[in-house]
Length: 383
Image (tube, rainbow, N blue to C red; front, side):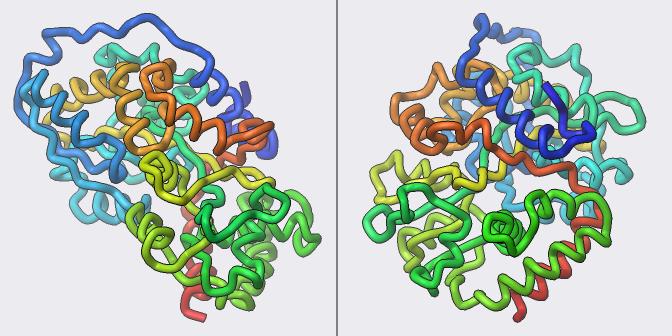
């Protein structure tokens, strides 16, 4: 198992979730036992976590079992979370949910506190490859991990099954930019541009590996993103909707005239489970994979309650109830064994063949990269 901080990004990006996914689908462990001492606390906890990650029925079950009230604020983006935490210095937040590749943007902010592993009774339930990301990339000033893996997913291609079919049966990021779909596509601006870059590598407009070389230094990034931005601006008429949250993705496909989009897997697969005419699949260039975690605010006031919720969420049966509702995947080993057959069917259809071996986990993202990317994103959106 290689980690994202190893020298060869081409290998590390793919191996993190390739091995992790296999473990999550194939392995299980013994039952997790709730400690009465931990859960006999009552009180409340303030969470700023990605929308839908903790479904309402899971929150209700937790509150009924522990007496702890969960104040849940749905999160739409990492940028939103960073802005909120900086503005409040973390006050009013106990648990939040940054993505694995954003450690470089948190490491100097002193907004998080390290976890006390001794207080986490479900730690052994977690995918070890994903857990190691916290031990290495989120171990700020050698004080211990400031991040625990929670939910993982991918960004790939979604479409209306009654209105579109990928040529050849296999989707591509290029479907977004195909003139046949003009005015009927949607993307999130910055990741849609990255997807365009991966497609450009297959057409010769970029060299293989250029998209990931852009993470190495500013000169490389500007060389690559100049080309990506020019490509996207020339084809901006393709895009009907720019999305930045779950509901916009859902509404785009169901109500707003979108027939194909570069989306997260979870929202689309949850709609598919309900019988809507939509589907999601990893494209031939490789889906972009991420792991959203749990992090403890340095200003957290409800520490005992936070650990109680963490331990509850790391129970395989609870994790299974969650992922079959929101459509993403769990870092908890054995969670899939507590899902319904629809979840497993959707998973297999979303990642057919060697799709899991072809995942592209986002590399660790330094602040300079995020800042420059925002420049290019704004140039595209405002064009």
